[in-house]
Length: 278
Image (cartoon, rainbow, N blue to C red; front, side, top):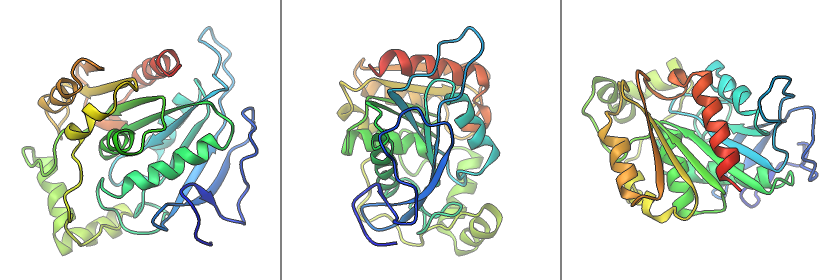
């Protein structure tokens, strides 16, 4: 695949044609601004037969998964299916995950992956783009909105507020996987996740530093009060950094990220996006 701008589609792939009423999915590889190939899927809006609102044809979701996820994981596909009741959905595998190229930088360069997916989503003719991210993806949608903009609403679920957090056992295990050679082998062969061996240099803008730059774009922060990775001071810190410009949903009994987001919560997120992304 030849180099091209963010969101560039390889010559062998089906290209968007400004149709917002497609009935079949499209799968292709996008090229990021720094030349990484990103496995991406466009799912059209699903047909709704119950009393819920019909899907929006001018709104498209771009879904950013968590660390060790990818576009083919069942929990990612479940989120895509739920959001497709409210509009088409672009999902993708972050660099180093699944069939995408490169190696993950655990939230730093991943903003370029999301930016390519947002540009591709716009190419289908949708006038409104809502980014929805989970865990690592939740931090990426915050940083993307602050650094790149170009979206109409942002939903961050189970995101950390700050880097290098090791206050829970799951996060200590994650840091071992990222920082140790043997941990990176576990990531590669156990989770289909290829992790970059280099430390951040420089340290990227943190989620809590990004949040004040997002307004006036609508921002929703969602977090479970039973999250085993990041306690509730993380979403509270993010909401406080927004200075009243963000909505905070603390969900009783909810755990972490996609696995813990049930269909009822995803429906509420869809309703919020349709109402606020206008």
